[in-house]
Length: 169
Image 1 (cartoon, helix red, strand yellow):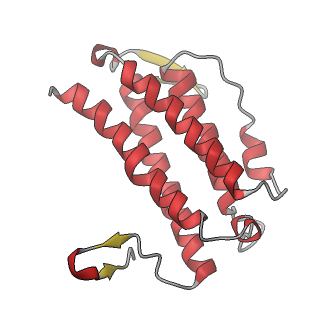
Image 2: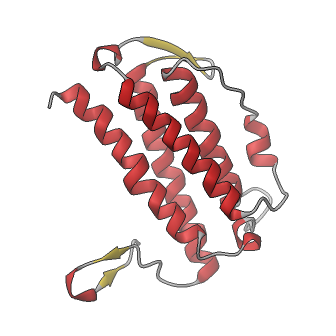
């Protein structure tokens, strides 16, 4: 596999098979109320972070890389306070990641150096993908940290032979 195709495939795998399942695993252990808890008004809830990830992936990959028409209200992602059910939030994020994966599956590796204007920035397709993967990773970590604070327990996201689970942090 050439490097460009590997980059696209690996980026998709990180979103679909690494970050998204971790988010789903911890969110499913929480109540809707816990998903919308925030430590203070200057911080985000897990619900806000999931809305933000959906908006970011949709804008940068589906819209930017895939050249599809998207509408995003970024401020609303952070301003939302109504308790959108966790199942609805997860469904939205899963659909968005699935759409993005479809865009990436059809992406010709020769297009990685093409320029796109996304969120007021001129970036290459490669930069857009890289931005989304690192952004998704960062917010996944925040979601996991918030879930760990709320549950006050080991999230047990990694199981190893012999049944010994290790902590993320």
